[in-house]
Length: 186
Image 1 (spheres, rainbow, N blue to C red):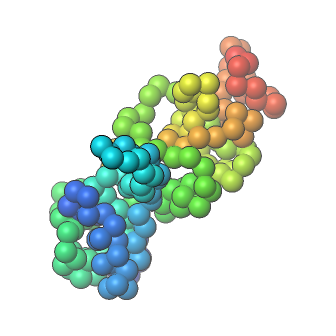
Image 2: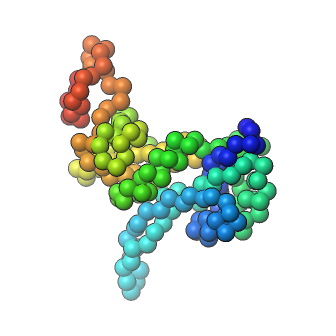
């Protein structure tokens, strides 16, 4: 990996310190991205909506690999996700997809594992062009976006007519033609 190229990396942080570490990195002039979602929590005396990390224990940061010692000295940060001794960059496309979801205002939530589903591409709405797995939960369509490096995923609620199957073949082996009704088996 080249030290001359700014890359996105996943940072492994102390539990419940994601926001503190993100702020500390920003204060050091290091770009960070912490995707959050809103959850309704109930305590003994009240209910509240709180913002929680979509990837608990992780956040993303963009820096030159040669700056890793400055990043690692951040309080609350355990390490940078690696393959052996090599830093493991996160693809720009995965970060871009997560940033688009965060900016879309759509309902999101962490998703622990990918269920068996169909690969789809978004054809409408604020996430046009993104590719993910399609699920249906409680009669509502959801798109699962994954960060392969972390083996984690998030779930975002979408409209049924925003998606089209990717690479679906007809029983005769021919690609399906538009339109792409989800109920139709080509």
